[in-house]
Image 1 (cartoon, chains in turn purple, cyan, yellow, red):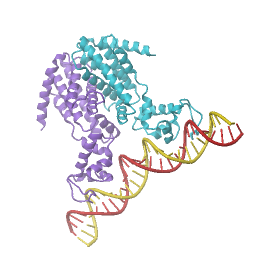
Image 2 (tube, helix red, strand yellow):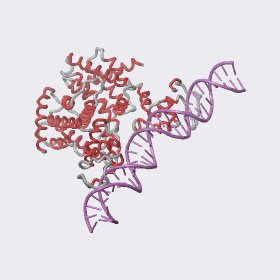
Image 3 (cartoon, chains in turn blue, purple, brown, green):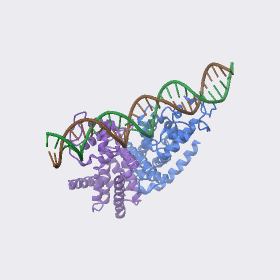
Image 4 (cartoon, rainbow over the protein chains, first blue to last red):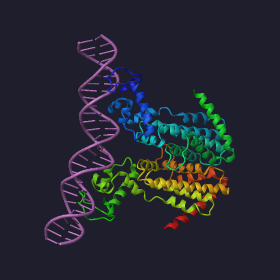
Length: 234
Length: 234
DNA sequence: CGCTGTTTCGATAACCTATAGAAAGTCTCG
DNA sequence: CGAGACTTTCTATAGGTTATCGAAACAGCG
C-alpha cells in the first residue's frame, strides 16, 4: 500500500484529470475533511471524495483501504483537552478553576472538530480494533476529570457529590451542547462555539460549587490557566 | 396503499411463508422496533425487517413506501414528557419542582425510547417534510421548559440566568446522558435509566437553585407531581 | 531497451433502498 | 356461480453504495 511514500511522488500511472499536487494521502484527507464538515461522514461517499481529490473512486482505496481509515487519519490531532487535563490534574491551583479550564477546553475542541462527536463515536464503535485509541483517550479524560472533582470535594470547594457521576454528566453536557452548536434545531436560537463552551462549563460548575458567587472568579482564573498551559506546549 | 385496512385482512396473494397473524402494518412496526432496539436504525435493513415479519423485502414497501415511514409510525407515541410540560407550565406549584418533574420525565422517555435520540434526529433532519412534528414538539418543549425557568427566576427560587440558554443546557444534558445510558462506553460505569434521569435533573437543578440544600425536597415534590399528572391522563 | 516498482484505472462483486409489473388470492354483484 | 375489481404478495430489476482484482501507464535503473 502507498502509506510508505509521504511526499508527492512522480511515479505511477498518471491521472486522467492530470492534476497532481502534493501528497495524495494528504490531499484526500484535506478534501474529505471539507466534505465531512459540510455533509457529515455517513452522507459523504467515496466517489465524492475521489472527485474532489481528482481521481477515480477505486483509486482512493489505494491510499485508504477502508472509508473509516480516512477518519482515523483525520483524528490523529485533536487531543488538546486531554493534554490539558493531564497537565492540570496534578496541579496545585484550585480544583474548581482546573475543572472549568478542562471542561471549557473540551467543549471548544468538540465544537472545532470536523466531525460530530456522536458520528465519530458511531464509527469508532463499529471498528473497535482501529479506534481503540479513541476509547482509551475518553476513558483517561473521564478519569482525570473525575480526579479533579474528587480533589475539589475533598478540599471543600465543591459540594459533596459522586465524582464519577458528575464527570459523566459534565462530559455528556459537553457532547450534547456540541450537537446543538453544530446542528441548530429549526426555530431555536443558535450559539457560537464560545457560547456553548462557556454555557457548559458554567452549568457544570454551578451545579457543583458550594457558593455560586465564586463563578466569575473561577472563569477568569480558568482562562488564565488555559492560556499559560497552551503556551507551554508550543 | 394498504394504510386503509388496519385489521388483518384475508384478501390478497398469500405469503410464501404462510404465516399471517394480525395487521401486517402493526406486525412490521413491532418487528422493526425490536430490530431498531437491538441494532439501531441505520444498521437494520429492510430485508431483515421483512424476514422477521414473514414476507419478502419488497413487500414491506407496500405498507411503508420508505424506510423512514416505519420510524415515523413508531414515533406517534412517546409524547409523555411534552404532555407533562404542557400540564405543569401553567401550574401553581414551585417552579423548581415542576422543572425537576419535566426534566426527569423527559430523560426517562429518552431512555425508554426504542431509538437513540440522535439517530432519530438524524433521520428527521433528512426528511423534514415527514418529521415536522418532531421539530415542533421539540420547540414547544423548549419553550415550556424555558417558561418554567423564567418563572423560577422571577419568583427568586432560581438564581439569575438566561432561561433560554439554561433550557438548551438542560435538554442537551438529557440527550447526552441518554446516550451514555444506551451505549455505555467500554471501561466506564454503566447507569440505569433511573440513574441517568435523576442525575440529569439533579445536575440541572443544582446549577440553577439558589440554595442547593433545597434539592431533596424538590426531588420528592416532583415525584408526587409526576404521579398525580400521569394518573390524570388515563 | 527491457525490468521493477508505483500509482491509477476499469470492471465487477456484494449489498442496500426503492420501483414496476405480474401473480394469486378474496370480494362483490349480476 | 362466474366475471371483473380490489388487495396483497411476489419476482425482477434499476441505481446507488463500499470494497476487491487485475490490467494499464508511467518513472527510474541497469
